[in-house]
Every structure is written in C-alpha cells, then in structure tokens.
Length: 428
Ligand code: SF4
Image (tube, rainbow, N blue to C red; front, top):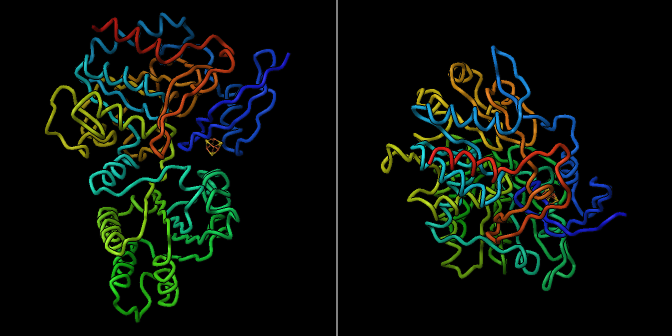
C-alpha cells in the first residue's frame, strides 16, 4: 500500500518543508512540490552512482568489505595519523556535525568545510555588522524591493523565487510579482533576468564601485556618469526605487564574494546598510549558501568551540581561518590522513593541488560515488539524511527544521551518526 508523508527537502539551503512524498514498497513513487533540483535529490537514493558496499584499497585496488571492516580500517588510519583533517560536514545534520567536531577535538585534528571558501565568512560578517537576515515568512509577506547580486537563483535556489520571494503572494504582497520591484546585478545575463524589473550587467570586479556610487546617491550626491559598466540612468532608477522600499532584501551569491575585491564588496555593503539605516529604510541581506546545512555548521562549531569557520584542535587558538582552508592545508602538506564527509573536494581543487594528495590516506564517507571516491583508501557508504535517516538542520533564514526518514536505505547503508560514534568510541 502506498503512503504519503510530508517532508523537508535537503536539496539546497532553502530546506523546503512542504514536500509530499508518496512511497510504496520502500520506493519513492511520486514527489510533489519539489523543484527539479529537489526531485533529482530525492531520486538520487536510487541512483546509478549510489554507493552500496564499503570498500578498502588493497594493493591499489578497492575491495568490498563489511561495514565493520571498513570502519576498523578507518580507525586504524586515524589512530596512526600524525595530523588528521576532517573535511566536509556542511551537507550533514547538526547532530552529525557535532560528532565530527567532537572527533576532531579528540584526535587533535583540524576541521574545515567548503563553507570556509563560500558563505560562512559572509554569515559572520553580517552578524558582526548587525545586518539582519530576513525570515522567509516576512520575505513572502512584506518584501517589496529585492536585489539578486552575483547569484542566479533560477538555477541554484529555484523555489526562493516561487515560494518565498518574487512570485510568492503574502499578506502585503497579494499580487505577487506586481507588488515587488526586482533588481538583478550580475556580470552575465542568466534566467534570473526574466523575473527582474531592472537588470544591471556589471563589469567584473567592480561591484564595490557600484556600491560606493549608490551610497553617494543616497547621500544626495549627483550621479553624472556611467559606473562599473552601468548607465547613470539605471543607477538613478535603482536609487530612486531603493528610497521608496518598505521592506528590502539583498541576496548575494558567490559572484559577489569570490572575486579579488570580495572584502571591498562586503565593506561597501556595510556602508550601504549604514546609509539605509540613517534613512530609516528597512533592509535585510541574505547570503545564497548552497549546501543544505552550512548555516547549521557555523552554529554547531560556535556552540562547541571558540571558532566560527574552521578549527585546529591541536595547534590552536591563533591560527587564522585562511590558514586552515582545505586547499592551504593540502599544499602546505599539513596532514597525512584526511576524513572526507559529505563532500567532493576533488571536483573543485585546482589540478596542481592533486599531487599533494598522492601519499595521504583518504577516508571517504558519503551516500554517492564521485571523483573523490576514486582516490579513497577507505569508502564507507551512508544513508541520505532527510530520505533514509533523520536529524536537524538550520535553514538559510536561521530557522531550525527537522529532516525525516521516509524509507529504509536500499543496501543497508548505515547512518553517519553510527559511523562517527563508532570511530569516536574507538579513539577515546
Ligand atoms: S528549492 Fe531547494 S530545498 Fe526547495 S525543493 Fe528545490 S532543492 Fe529542495
């Protein structure tokens, strides 16, 4: 008999909580309300690249073993490690993140995540500068001025547009799109252009210059020339609409924080918020984090250490987060054993860094096979949180949500909680 169950999607950081799954005989038969990315995420439980068996590399080849044998081998490598790294964790639940951090502490290891090169520093910046992050509910009900800057939600966070912002109909935005003014700022024209009222194609690396100009305009200075590839007419239109906003939100993506002028962009964003506040304009900002629980990792690390982005639990306190970024650790040859959890660093490490991984022991824990699994010495398959196991996560608007189990894993894969608890017990 088929069953319907309402669940949260962990396909991206929006963690949509209105997904309806229809299951029968431990299979997902239908998925309602998810975007195409969410649909693909749920269906990956059955994917061709689903890891089925634990394995260990012997004489250069991966050999299938039992879960206990794979975990014992991981424990052996970790116990003998001079300098272990735990990397990943932002696509895992808060409970699993806590265990990963406890393990790093216990073994005097380093913990880092892809979040250190993406939006965890943005989250910290917003908090330090008291720039508020909006709640999704308020976004839907009140946001009448929306800026997407250096991001493309039409591809990365599809339901941000339909469920929470541009097209959504809320208390004060009953007409949906007609009640909102949308600005899109990017170096290229993408699908997001089609839902914007004003598209500004900005010259690469000149975001901070445009921000400075907007701040000048808000202070009453005349805009008399084109700036950052944008016409003075468009800048004037942007400033005029900004001034009449009742609830404004600036969503910013990797295009805003990853160039060589990233720190200037954030500094100018802060200046903009300072000016908006002086004018009594009600504005918010939201980093467009991708991984479903990056926000959760930031909180769990702060709750369980003195650090916010990454941490070295041996040589400690005064190491900068830059120093502890995974690619820096790799090229500085800091580690001999790397535990990769729910991440695929080989997909984005520069090719020149690969050679530094050659003589490391790599333990790979994930539901799916990928490039990183190709070079792993131990592979331990896990369940999909939010499909085959439960837990909590923090949405990008900082709300906690519960991920629910709706089917059993197809090949008796075990949860990350169990794997990490076993390793933790053995090294304690
Ligand atoms: S927007 Fe994100 S969380 Fe929502 S259904 Fe799509 S992938 Fe899942």
